[in-house]
Each structure stands twice: as C-alpha cells, then as structure tokens.
Length: 431
Image 1: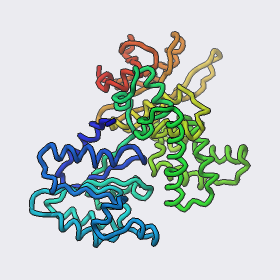
Image 2: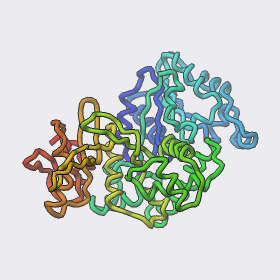
Image 3: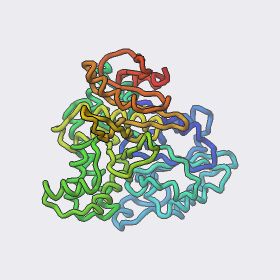
Image 4: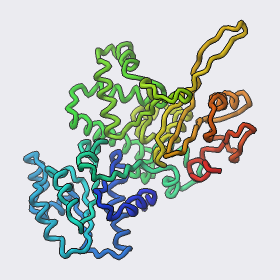
C-alpha cells in the first residue's frame, strides 16, 4: 500500500534546479528514503526526464556498492566508510552529456568526506543533487552549514493526520484515537495488528533511536539517558528545565546527575529530531523567557512506546498532535505567557501569569491557539478564553477542541474549531 506524501513531494519539485543541495532531514523512519527514491523518482520519469539522467545510489545497498567496487561486508569488517574516489569515478561514468542529471543519494553519510564531495558537485551546472540520510551524524540539525550555505533543507515529519487518513480503514474519529496512540511512522501505520504496531515501535526505539544517540555522542551512562527520556515522556507538554529534571533524578532515582549533563542529553534528543522544544514568550513584553520550556515528541507512537503504553493522557496527546501539525505547516511555535495584575477583595494586588498554549508565527502571520480537549460548560470556556481577552492585539485567537462543533466565532471574535477540521482542513484557520 502506498502512502502519498504530496506535501513534501511538492517541496522537492519546487526546488528542482535551484543551484542548492536539497537535504531531506527528519526523525528516522519518517519516510525520507521513500520520498526521494520512489515518489520523487517517479515524478522525474513522469515529467520526461530520461532514466539514464537519473542516478539513484543507496550507500547501504550491497548491489549499489558492488557497482563502485565496494563490499558491504568489507566495509563492516574494517569499520570504514565508502571510498569517495570510487563513488566519484562512478558518477563521472554516468554523466553521459551536458544535459541536466539528477543525483538521488540515500544514506550519503556512509561515504567518507561526503560534505566535500557534494560541495564539489555544486560547481557542476548539469547536476541537481538531492540527498537524505538516517543516522545520527546526518540528522544533526546544523548539517546545512556543512554545505557552505548552499544547502536547502526539507524537514520531514512522520505522517500528518490527513496523510494517515488516506490509508486508515475507518472514520476520522476512530482514526484520531489510533493516531494519537500509535503515531504516524509509516512502517508502524502499515502494520495491521495492534501487537505488531507495539512491537515495531519498541524495536525502533531500542535498536535505532537510542543506539544512534549513544554511538554518535559516546554516551556512557545509557541508564540515565533512557531515564531522562522516560521522564520527558511522562511529562510531555509540561514546563520543565534541566535544574527541575535534576531534582527529579535526585529524589526519585537517587542519581547524582548534573543539570549540565541533562542539558546535554536534551540537546541530543533534539538533534536527532525525537523531541522539539517550545520556548516561553512574554506576549505583552515581547520577549523570550529562557526557561522553563515544553518538550513535544515528533511522533506520539514513539512517546507511548517509551512508556509501554501505560500512561496515555488524551489531553496531552491532543496538544502534542496540534503542535506537530503547526510545525509541519511551517509555523514557529512558542508557549505564550500573559502577565497580569489582579486585586483581591481587600484590594491587595497579586501578579499572575496566564498561559496561551501556542503562539504561532509564519512570516507576518500570527495565531494564538488554545488546546482544549473538551469545553463542557461556560466555566471551562471562560477559563480557556481568559488569556486571549488579556492580549491587546488583533491577531486571530483560536480554541481547538475535540468536541464536535462547527467552526464559529463568539462575540469577542474568538474562533472555536474542532480538532478534526483543524487537522484535515488547513483553510479552516483562515475562515
């Protein structure tokens, strides 16, 4: 069964022949290789590019390595990378004329000095280069700097809910429940049995994600790294910082881990795209607050697998889904803080901070969004809208709820929409 990824495919199509190296990044197993080698390759063929002007090469393929005189067994045996001279000789043999040739390179980090090789190809007018990689070295978020400012990143997420629903056999209500439980990793989505999904997620975590971080960064204390991941999984969407996490380790785990080590581990998780952090932003003061932050998982299935599916909170899961959808659509997303001063019945002034779940910016466009799993009564609505009322600007303010309600504005201009419309119809935010 094929899952369409038109959102990302169109990004690649629009970047053809732009003089940059197109670099597809994203958490492992989110579909990068499939996008490049199946979907984009098919587009090139359908648009009239001759097959001999498309060079597909996977550095983890024994058959492809054989073409350049390399052996997968020998590479593993001697713990070395692919010889770049052999690869470049092969590419020279494939460039048959001065017409445009397309290089689709998978797992390119398995070649020695790959940055220099790719930079060299930038100087050739008849080469358009697209690359992807899926180990921790290549997934580093600063990989684009390796290409001397000539890298064009396409960041890819696991399946969005709208992509997920193209293959889900059921209605959107059951679909969202399953999506929030098992996530959108394509390999997992295509599994039919719940036990298969669970086992696949657990294996991915144990055999790929943790292993990559440990190998890349030389982490010695695997236990502390995994304990930190478990704590973050339990507190997804909650404000935290290294000092607070250190105190949790000291009291619960009786560990002497330092806040500096925790900060380092957090950066490892973000560099591998397992987690993303949302900074706090003072809406009135128009300034960022350094700590604490909120952390969200790039895939909820991975988060739930980390806790053996024992701790599932639909309110936090929905918040995580909304965050990921906004990020996929290109928004930068912060946690909003609205400082207020209130007088009690005795006239004493107290200072408080109200929270807006998401402050979303895209160019000159800004949205304020509250995630409210359910709004059963007017008291709950008042609670959700209170921060909005204290914001004195004209940017759109939106409540997203799982209640089945039509998109509608109240008398203060606050839009309420249901989660299904939000996820399946991006234009609903502009209504």
